[in-house]
Amino acid sequence: MSIDVIDSASARPAPHLNDRNIHHAAATSSSIKTAPHSRNEVMMNEYPRTWVKTPLKESAALSRAAGCRVFLKLENLQPSGSFKSRGVGNYMLCRLRERLTDSPNTPIHFYSSSGGNAGIACAYAAQSLGYPATIVVPTATKPAMISKMRTAGAHDVISHGASWQDADGYLRDEVLCKDPNGVYVPPFDHPDIWEGNKTTAYEIRDQLDEKPDVMICSVGGGGLFNGFIKAMHEMDWGDVPFLAMETIGADSLNKSVIEGKHITLPRITSRATCLGAIRIANKTWENMQANKNVQSIALPDAEAAMGCWRLADDERILVEMACGVCVVLCYDGRLQKIMSSIGKKLTPQSRVVITVCGGSDISVESLYEMRKEYAWVEKTVSDGTNGSGAPGSFTIPVVVGHEHQIDRATN
Image (cartoon, rainbow, N blue to C red; front, side):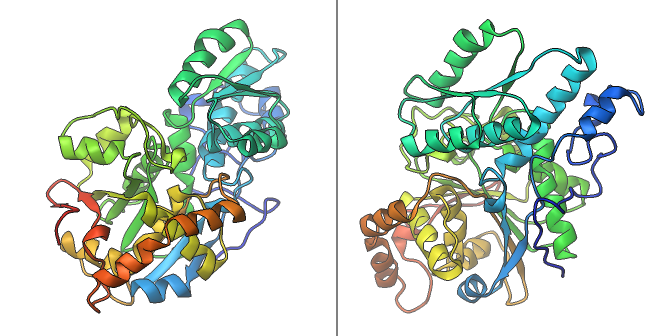
């Protein structure tokens, strides 16, 4: 196994993707319209890459806790602080190619709606490519997040509406329509975003040098999930168990699987707000239904928070709760219990890959407050194990797949 530590100057995408015309993007062939050696092709090759190849790190601490080999794909090291740099960046490069092909001298202004990581990724990519970006955020967006968008290069940040849906509607109906040069950038629901995100899986394949035994990532709207599913089919990894993680209260995928239909949550009640899509993308629902290897899992905010502070303790990495909900599986017997429930047994040599999706809505201060608020969860786990190392009734997750379900209220 090779583990890469790579900076932005030396980063390259997975070699299996089409990078003939945009040497750093995963642009799909359908978006390639320039003739070989055209002026526009030369122009495109002059643009800097908008994401980097990230390390895959084997964690001794998490491996010891989980009883197997745990590898962390460190997407928190992307320029924007999250995996969003890949999908959002690729989408913007695809639209930029189209605009330069059709109207080389037309000004371009990117527009996105996000109170979180997609907005930062859009701002950073636009700045890197030399174009302005305007981000519309919900009014509840923290000032620190708005400041990070501006620091990343946002031309303007507009606050509107109580939810992302409100902000997105305002962007489309009131802002974007007034700019004939505007380009809309969705946060997760587009094939070019999934195409960019799938580079994560190709990097894991090249870094791990062998098929993993389990893959774990969090799901909001499903942009990263859809990229993984696409790549895993292309790489013949369709039989690898895949744990799709959410927090209860931001669990539109989990609730859809339980109800057997594509549902919309009435609102987001979880504090993991960057998972806050009240409705997953249609493609996410299709992929969940079509892939028997995928299990949808939801855990309470308290356990996601515990994953954050334990990762900080063990690996000195700060992450949002959306990432903590993946990491916490390594502790207190959760992962072994879940895998046993679907008829799989992990050995000390089993390879588990967790995508550390990253996120900017975290600080030392907020982590400290989380730990104070949810400190009781560790005592609850300790009292519930009966010395077995397995979680008690509180920590039984909602696990749903095609044939398996565990009720949180029972052991």
